[in-house]
Length: 144
View 1 (cartoon, rainbow, N blue to C red):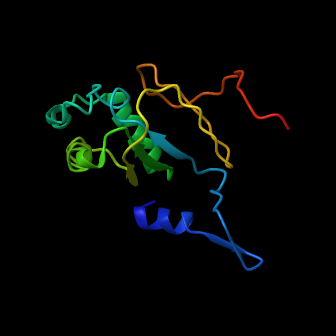
View 2 (cartoon, rainbow, N blue to C red):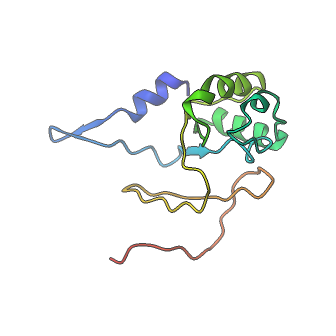
């Protein structure tokens, strides 16, 4: 799917005359992928000159491009700031990453607890990209 097709898929839907948030087809995943320390060397925002020379993690490139080619949505979500967007886009293009969106300004520091009205699945990157596998885990949820 190209960016235009993805944007059409994600456009507000209308139900009984009311706009509602879109729900992706079950077979399409919407991946939010960090950049620094996840797909390449961990470059702090305070050293932007290094962003253009960060070493890519080959398994990340292979896996993410495969997911993109399978029709999944690839969105890079990074703590880099808007000031770093140009460097980020250049680096992603020069290293061959296929993606649909680049979101800047993710909060820094980790220990995220994402609250959303849509189902959110989180996967911690531990040094190697592979296809995802099912694993049972304990999670925190709101009381019903």
